[in-house]
Length: 532
Image (tube, rainbow, N blue to C red):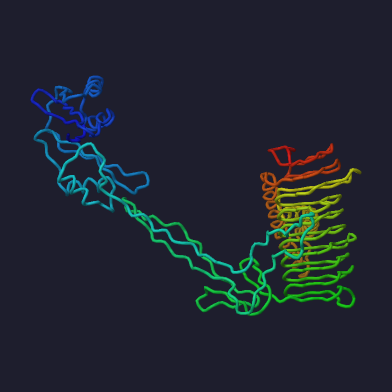
């Protein structure tokens, strides 16, 4: 059985205009009344829609329906061109001519495509296929655009550990194993540190309407040399120039040697500043400082001293800061205990006890091990605080704050402190300017140095007003970020006591009752206390 599509055909006679409806055969396709109505309407043919629709619904064999009494010329073969929404295809539907009506040739079809907006990608074989076997009322792709060829992003592979978020291993008894930190990447001279596969640029495509379609942008990267590293001539391989430790700092790879101090950092050593890793076998005594571009590892106790690292700080015992000590690390801080100290980390902080300290981390603050308690002080994390116990039975004031990068909070508070001074300085400058301007307008002949002073104060005033406006705008931006941020959580595996104040973004919750095995998260304008 033939598989012919259902079609309609105009017939013109001396007594009027007729419509022939031919049903589909076999697996042939049918058409909808809407398409027929559009065809007739476009040709301004009046007809009874109810009669024609009824005939179409009951179409089982060929029917001829009179449309009107108008006498018209035979209708030629028709074409309807539709361009897809993405402009990548032009689809045509052909309509049969009246008996004795004209049929289209190759040139006429191409001209109709051009009129419809097609400028590129004509599929000539499909046009010729239709001309060889005229199939009506069926979608035929007559033009197809060319998709863009997507490029590839540049890829850098590092051959040393760049994941500084790995936590130290915890023993079965809950203590931290400082012998298996595996976070310091030792490298040898001549070792391959990184390899770059450069980006491959894509090629534009073109739509059927002739518009260029740009491929997705590719990400370009370059290898950057740091301390004691060397780049190959093609810029695609990075090598170590020394034995030491590799550290990714921003987009630069640095290799640094380690400096070992056999005993304490005290009067016998003085302050330590080193362009690499520092290993201290003893303790760091009160009043001294250790500054390193790499990691700092201390086997003993840190007292009221300053430790500042471009990498990690690892204290195998801890810090008893006596309200003088400070730990500042661009990466993680691991310490047995932290007491009466200020601690800031660009990564995570992990310890077995935090007592009466100001602690802030962009990553997690994890207080675990045998003790796992936080008592007193202010603990801030950009992501999560996890502890066994928070606060104490004595109701010790303890702040737990999560959900906002501590550096954002610090910047907001710094600007907040600077604004009153700006206002005071602006007020003083304004008063002085008004005083001198009043004298000037009063006809007083001011000496040259006073005139220069007026000009200088005017410039300073404008600069200060601009700085104030920028500071206020920045504060509003930071406030908006803190208000909108709903991330961050606090997890307590044992007990959180009254006296604890919880802040998640800009929402505050005061603990009134002892609560065990709980988690605290922000739920819109409230803080929700749920199961651990």
